[in-house]
Image (cartoon, rainbow, N blue to C red; front, top):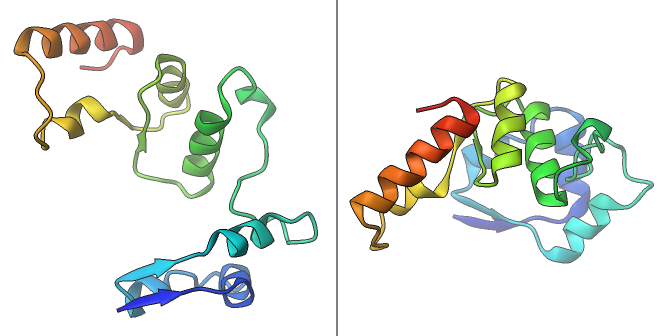
Length: 131
């Protein structure tokens, strides 16, 4: 079952720490862009805003990477999907498990030669100290 969410219910589910009930009730929750923007307004409680508070120690990363790492920490995520070297390095420094699209692309019809894949893996392992 698909549900379209309005701002107020999302706001209160987050505030009472029961937003996970949506996943138990629906197979898909769709949030219109207007609702997402309403949740970002300055009068919305910080806890409700979709974007986590800005972490000045992540200033050297681009906005998407900052948001991904901040949210991963805020939600105690199991891992973060990030390809950029600087973002991956920072995730590792913060003890956040990292995955990238190279691994995920192999499960699609994307074609990559074994040599190129081996080279990418070697470079990543050298730069961030992960196999």
